Image (tube, rainbow, N blue to C red):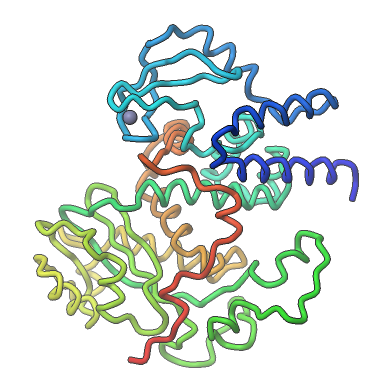
Length: 384
Ligand SMILES: [Zn+2]
């Protein structure tokens, strides 16, 4: 390893340490000690405090700020001075006290805010991972983790939302991919003995030969190695998009994906597939089943948005940028977010993403990102 790589590795270990401290009550004190030790040795992992200190001096105690409370979601938030060189805020509704990154994208990360800024902008502009890593001064594996963290923040903020009004729903079948799961340590340059390790695709009963990009599937029809993704989008820009099973989708699969998340007064628009119709009947919702491709493209009840999203997802998953199946939901929610926000300005989108919070939920940690597993619903082949 070169010195630069060693420094990067040390920084990553430091970040992991900080993430692990997440749930420790005395964490502020421990972090201070670690930071002091690092600074005394002439290193500076913390680029943030100097700027936040300046910013906090300009604000007065109790002044309203444009922050969302990470605990209750209220926008009624006031400034509360600073602690350990970082601004603190207090929610005027629930009384929660929180820091500028609490529950947000940059939580637990000791890289500068500026790096996150460049990163989010790059993600919105479709930059590649190597280019993001170079621009932000982070390693490739950190860039990958940051990407998953951004996707998780978007997915978490959509979690639990109820879809209302006119809801478009459709399914798409994608080839499975176990990219990145197999011999992960080797890719990170760590030596490990893999003789007893069972690769995920074998563990979960997917076919025993690696997926070749761009190749035609040998089996015709819907094989058990294909993953069914179901997506529902309402006219208020809310999305649910996730894998619902392997092979042909059943109405049970759709029930699993959308259970209790569609408002009872809404109108469901689907195509005329059996699963969709059966599912619509089971929900008791008002239902429009569209007959043809032309019908799906126009009129007040159409499948335009969901079809556009599915073409984007399908293109990615058949390209060399295909995503690991275990991360499918994150990629779908991200692409949906971009599609639904396509008319907003870059800076508006950047601000929204950097400030996304899910009330009552912590920002996802790098550890959680690394230990992500294949969703339960894809582990077994259904016997139907
Ligand atoms: Zn609150």
